[in-house]
Image (tube, rainbow, N blue to C red; front, side):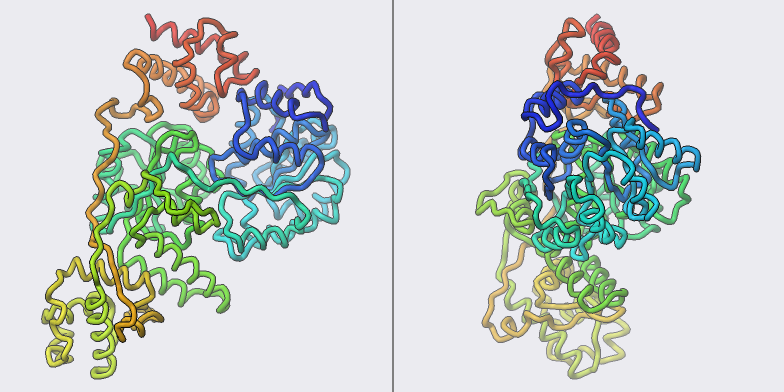
Length: 627
């Protein structure tokens, strides 16, 4: 449960100058400098102040509480909703020599008691626990008897009902303000709009905290959304053309879709495993651990998977169904490319997604305010899908970050700008069809039958209701069925058309009036074909990591030799390979060409403990590859 190798204390006093934090950063974690607001956040917490931190996934949030916990006297308590991942989080800290432990329901009674005794004896640097355990009177009493350095509330957006991962258990964390008034607190999240930010601040009673809002931009991630036709075939093309042999996550809305998609990929030679809440807990744990420990494995999952996953070499995240909110989408896509190397966020999105999501909201539980929030989230998500301008600009604007009109150059819109067309008349035809069917036949239909009427195609429904007698019969024959489906999808996203009821029938939307009266023009995007891959895999063999793209042939051979050595070490230690060294660190080692163990100490990601533990092995692997 705890590391036998405690970190040596910094030479400076606990509240000493910033160079004490830099010393810990270098000797423990192996990095030379802080990124963004990290240094300022660490200084705020280490000096005893509270902080609210909004920082994107992969931005280095964990260092913001790990280093202050080492600089201050006592144990840092990390509140996390991720019981299934606490063991891996502790193992990652132990790998760099930090004394870490967790208290959760997976421990036997005697194991939990041992951790508690270590806490009281001051033998733990960082202690992880879930919010529901922390707020128990017994736990509060235990913590009062221990020396605490800080409280870190991870995934703090879970406290907000505006957030996408609301957890009622987080509501009780406000007790920390009264129970431990002298212990600094830091709340951290990777996804928070202004509303979520404000609510989590109020609910955690952190109004006096210093707030740090970093850029939400992840420039290494390429965002792409394409029309859904044959989504699994589209996914297979993505993997085969760009991510063969690389790790990825595929998100589906239903458990059944997760199961069938994982099997479909496996049947085609793509190693894939399912993950959802309906699987046996042991199976879920096994699949999660295999994903963390393997290179090139794909996990197909519902949104139940991924929060807190610290696997740095996930090269793509794919969505086969529309996410419910931009916050959820951003958090899920953020699990790609945590190492800073190029990664892809890809989605297949169709008309059925819009209808099913709106039906889910309208028929779901929750009061009207909850449903209004859900509709607001969905409308923002649809706007991102249907934008004809840079996706990154719109994504960042949602989180309050204005890039102006500067396009990113690394999304499908920038790489393959869409054409637009004047769809005002087409929109009027759709609305007229909806109105005529309702007024003259008392009927409402989903998109399929509406398109049949617009195209003037007979079927049983049409014949029974004499649709051919309507003035709107066949008025849309100038467009194809594919073009009408694209137009309806975009009209739904803009609120010109709406879907209602259990069957998702189409009705005029809130924005229909001005369009019918020709007071508002409608411009839609021409139905897009998938953009050609912007990166070719021909420059490296199947299964080679994208991190090696910039290496020469001889360097790539040394890189692969280091990867093989890392895999053997990880297998022996029963830990994920990235806990030995990340791909980025292996690339840095290859480029540095160290001739001695001492020369390795200057490589980013090589701390003191890893240098002592792995230095000779690295040199041996490099020597073997050179020979």
